[in-house]
Image 1: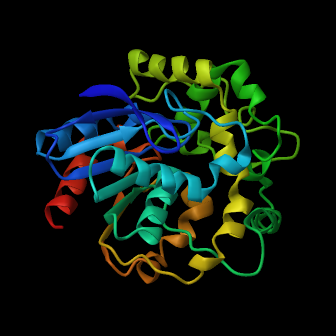
Image 2: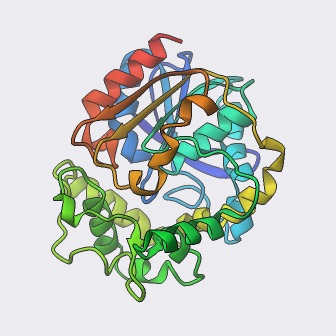
Length: 321
């Protein structure tokens, strides 16, 4: 596996890659708060099976450029980054895999450019179609209010200074977020994503948080180094662009994902508290869905928590294309 920097039309992207240069191209898109290294086990496994596996640090993360404006983090920009990367790698098609925030990007790659992205797989995040009738952040706030569980952290991330507590102690922030969304963490200690008034996401997580069992100190140090250098403002801009995304995608209203698709989720993934309802309708919006898997006892960080299971499912999906 090698790391290098690639200049595309719109961005300088740092990537990790493995496998033969002429192998079928597979892009692996990470989420929050992660990096390309979150896919290390998959890059190695896919490369060993003859695929050209390429995982970028996404826009705003790690060794990739970090624009300052929220508008630079719209879904159109993020899909464009993937399109540009395929082109820069000398290809005209790829399979796209995503986890967490990388999932919505992967789904929209397949939705917007099925001519390039011939299949899609998402871990943890089902496709969430654009809904007519209002901006998503207001809808999220209304849902949270009706639930009586407090504010959804996504709404809290809209504040211009929401990244500052994370920037103040990246190691603490990362340790708490990885621990509170992990399948090995006791259920009553996992985050639900809902926050009581006056309590931040980090403050809502037990100070006794430790590294998940799959996270070695050396691997954790990679994250701490990257987020200490780059900060959390760019990554939070992905959340701050949600209403903008809705405004930019009216042309996608009611459009379905027709390419072959795969979905994998952890049984105990806290994201299911607020996105799980979309699992039931996934086949309606992705009629090419080949399979949907729930991994017992797994949490949110699937490709790192359960690398062997995820590799087996991904390789089976790819082999069937």
